[in-house]
Length: 188
Image (cartoon, rainbow, N blue to C red):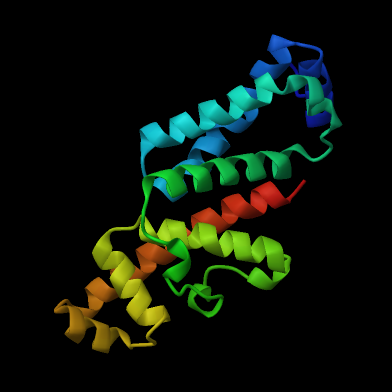
């Protein structure tokens, strides 16, 4: 099957085309799974999110041809589903983690997003941070929130400076990957 623009696929899907839906699924399912995994850190849950989102797309296919920017629409669907899932399964409030734009320095230029998008994406970054291993998250918060030097963190945590560098590097890698996925969804 040749590459078709999303808008053509959406029209065909709204007319009931399984072939168009399969093409859309093949195009976006890997991205949805990767995005979900970057937040949930669970392959099975990520697959469930992907399947649920695409099931909703198929179930609501009659109205889908009115969508002109599918990637942002898909991003919102995935984001909302993950937030609902986390709200149901986690009792901890992610809004109390204290993550700020300043803490994400070195990840991306958040000013490129609108304030609403940035607020939503900061919440997703909080979720991503909360899903990191405890030590990595603690080291990252000590660096970005408490503004401790790597040496101070190493002394406080009883680890080497190299281990601190490793945890900060890995945390930033995970956050950069999430931001790249977010930026992909924002590019229509």
